[in-house]
Image (cartoon, rainbow over all chains, first blue to last red; front, side, top):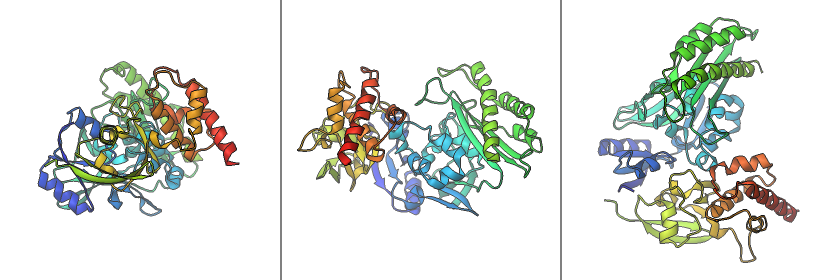
Length: 290
Length: 161
């Protein structure tokens, strides 16, 4: 393993100053389930690891009916998925987060790491995008907010500037008649990386027959998780019918730009986009009606 | 830079103090500094579960934890599962079901199963299989392991009554 120093930070200010001082040579250590493997394999370099697990802002989960849900970037997947309010109000997020690794990974890995690692196949990201989540970022100039769909800029690269780090993810209150779902295709039953992942959310009108607004996002079909805005635009104001949902799925399929790799061919991925988008939408509608 | 750090923790009920480099994994320190060689290095990248330990009640891969991170924490390794009175029911059932062949994955499986039974004393077969999905065994085909865990759960429940 490469040499590095370690510090457990006590405040957000301390983290920002350490990051700025080390000018790109410091990295945030949260669950470490991606970072430690990457350091060991020399896929990333670090001279200093800043452990943020002792910062209360980074590990807490809070919900407010007005403000919505705030998940600390270092809160573990296990902590998130076993939170009663998250289970009740955001089942579409739990769908995705519970898929990240086995129980040993769930206990360590967090949402912030899944985002910052910026894998095109990250399960949590399409689910966060369809919930209109935003990243809360601290830096030398204070705190800023960035929609999750703008956070990943290339495989393994995120929008954080030198001196900045992800403090939390904010998810708005779902509102009336809202439903969301995330699912993925993998060739095994469990413990794999998505060949394609699809998230969808819908808000229905009071008759629960018409779609007021919707979001569809795909994973593993582009260099970054993909918000398919045009599929959402198509469905807005439309009736909930099989034909409309299938047309939205076709639009999502057309927006995908998958590559062929060891997990699947481009053709297979294209096919999966339509199938999974349709299923995600159907389940989102079912939840919105429940 | 990269000077050794002093760490204090409670391991298997004992206060332990050691020096480590920040880059050393908990697994490496357990095995090479503290002589606790029960946790195995299988993949060293979080895939196989052979290095599982329980850290403040959470099941983790010790290859993905830095030793410096355990300052002030409490952990249980495979060496802390049996008591002076004898083997833990999980260990007994692994033996009686022949739930191991080469044995390399066994410490990880027993620690993982202990963590499961600590929070779910009456798991279904599906619960056991789901929980143990992060532990790999290349010999047994898992059936005997699952049966051993279910059987041990029953023994523990009978003892609790």
